Amino acid sequence: MKRAMLAGLSLILCIAFCSCADRQQSGTDAPSSVAPAQSEPAPDKSPVNSEPAQSEAAPNEAEPEAEAVTYPFEDDEGRVHHQIYINGELTETDHDAYTYPDEPKGAYYPIVEMLEHLGVECLFDEHLQTLTTRINGQIITCKSDNNDIVVGKTTLRGTAPEYIDGCFYVPSYTFMQLLDATVDFTSDRSSVTMTTDMVIDPDTSGTEGLSISPEAVTALGKQHYSGAEACPACGGTGKSICTACSGTGSVTQFSQSRDPITGQMTIKNARAFCSRCSGSGRTTCSPCGGSGKR
Ligand SMILES: [Zn+2]
Ligand SMILES: [Zn+2]
Image (cartoon, rainbow, N blue to C red; front, side, top):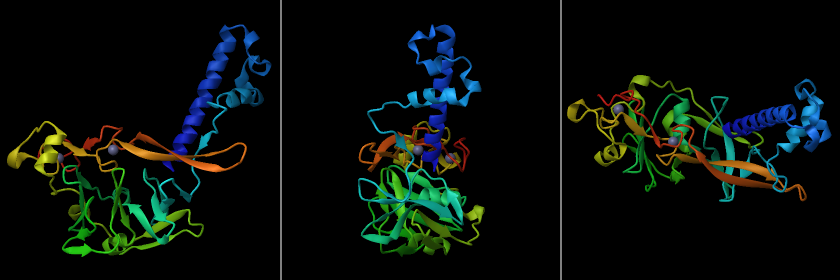
């Protein structure tokens, strides 16, 4: 969704910029070099005249224009992407849910963004490659090299979580266990749905009271507080590792383009700055609000 909005926005900006530049050009230059339709003054009064500027704005005619993807789609690594509905609401996430064509019932969900939508933040420890959070007092742990998700004293066995490009994805039954949720697909399979009635208590949920490893603290930078005074979640640095990208600073964005001759759709991916941390890989520590103090 965010991608679609961004693509739309950049298109609008592009059009705005080009028509602006065009206006400026016709104001200062002799209109001889410009196509007749565009040399008309005051193009903004006539939407017909501004059309040519718009088509001229297409960056490269040799290359088919990229557009927002249509769900579901399969990427070049064989994952079928789905949008996400949480409690009936289409949720904007940087990472899609996905299934594998061989096992179309088993969807994987980006756990950080799913829980954040429910008001629960997570803590990522770069050194341990571990994601942790609490829901109603139960600590949930995912490790990038481990097949199990641990909830309190229970280990959810079965399908392992996947760690792809700095994002933890968990199988749907994780939410059935964790949140007593029901999971399904929309009828056109463009989206997965997750519905839960569970009331999440903010006092016993989230990152407050969780701690990261000393090695991760070193990676975060200067400690403003140490020892008992330091916030355990950030080791006194006031910073945390961005959970949306696991500190990598980037996310994969997908777009599609249609071959003008064959009409075939191709999915392209590109790395983009993580929207959460603007590419820095670091965010403000939530329990201490960035002060570093316990
Ligand atoms: Zn990030
Ligand atoms: Zn802190």
